[in-house]
Structure formats: C-alpha cells, structure tokens
Length: 308
Image (cartoon, rainbow, N blue to C red; front, side):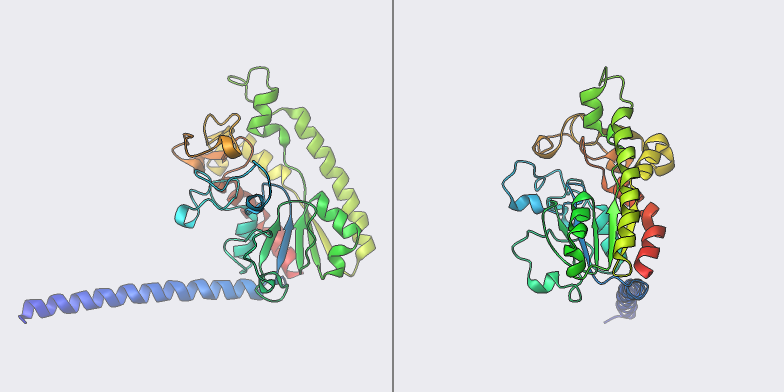
C-alpha cells in the first residue's frame, strides 16, 4: 500500500471515528436530558380522556367512518405512517409524554396489542389515550375534559390511583375552519371567527373552573386538580399568526381546507406546500406545528404540575 493510500485510509478511519463519537455523544446527551426530566417529574404515567384532538388511534378499533389511519394524515410522523391521529404529525399529548420522559409517541388505549405491563402506573409508564369519555383506567396522572370530571365525581380515578388530574377547557370553536364555512355569510371571502360559538366555549370554561375549585376542596389531599387553558393559546394564534410563524389560520392544509376532514381528507386530496405555516391541518384539527406551539405555552404550567 502506497503512502498516499495509507494517508487516505487513516483519514477515512479518523472521519468514521468522529461520526461514531458524534452519534454516541448525541445519544448520551439525549439519555441524560431524559433522565433529568424524569427526576424533575413526580409523574410516572398519564392517562388521557378526550376527543379526536388527543386520539392516538382509538378510532381504528371501533365501528366508525371517522378515521384518519390513511395518508395524508401522519405524513410528518416518523416513517410517515398514519397512526390514526387526526393531524399531520404529533399531538400535544405526544409532546407532553416525550417531555416527561415517558414515551415519544403514545399508544391508543384500544390497541389490542397493548399488554398489562404497558398500562401499569409504575411499570412502563405509558401515556395512554382513551379516545372516548367512557373508558375507565387508572394511573398517576389523568388529563381530560367533561368525561374525566364525571369519572372523578364517581371517585373512579381516585380509587385507581390518580394523584394529579388536569382538565382541559374548550378551544374557540368559532375559529374552526369547518364552523366558519358552515356559518359565515360568505365562506369564500369572509372567513372571520364566528364569535357566538367561541363565546359559548368561553362561558363553559368559566363554569368548569368554578366546578374544579369546588372539586379540589372535596378531594384534598387525595389528589390535585388543574385547569388547563386551551382557549387563549389558540385565540392568540388566530389573532397574531405571524408571532407563531403561521400564514393561514382560517383554512385547513388538506384539500380546500373548508370542509375536508377524516375520509374527505385522503390520498387523493391536495395538501399545502408547507403545513408548518397553517394553524389547521384539516377543517377541524390543528397541525403538528399548532400543537407544538400549544405545548410550549403550557410548559410552565405543566412543569409545576409535574413537580408538585
């Protein structure tokens, strides 16, 4: 082997060693950050009750045409696989699960391949979504809406070990593209929020907070409850889209953006060139970018919730 070939070989080996070192360093950093997150969190598992905005794929296992386990849904997920999430990528609950060091992508509660170990509060620490409001599961923490409130009222969640229970309010419904399309005087040219619908959500959120304050008095010190505001974060995105990097907040990215969702948003539908510029993925559900913005806004509240 000539001197020049030796130099080339040494250079190649050195370059390869640098790549391996960089990968190991990145992996070590990721594991360290995950470990720090776990130490800063008193939560070992999450259970989520909700609708399609937190459904990780439960609709795949029930008799319904309202599904999203086909393209273009899930196009920004790892491997670009449509899991049944009604968006192009991750949900707020996925980001929360990853942040808590539990799991990057949460599984649907109705997935028949899940084992008992997957659902154990102190075991794998799964963040599991129940896409309806009639599931009964237990865990260290629960996130939900009215269905979860009813479960707490029956003491079901408390009996099964839930210690931290967060209740998510309603979003400004009047700003959902499908609602604008169906209720605007001219859906093509006038796509402002339908305020009367958003006002209903705002009133509901006020009453929910009053109810939760009373609930906290009843269950102290067995568990802590928390109200999570989803209305104002989305309202701010609609009012100041540029602040969040959005260019379109009144149409979905899929199809015309006016009415398409579920089976109407399919592999034959056109999609926008950059979904990160859109608040909504289809005519009802937000994009991964919007969910991530909501997650970032909730981080301070979630930090206190996890550490208390």
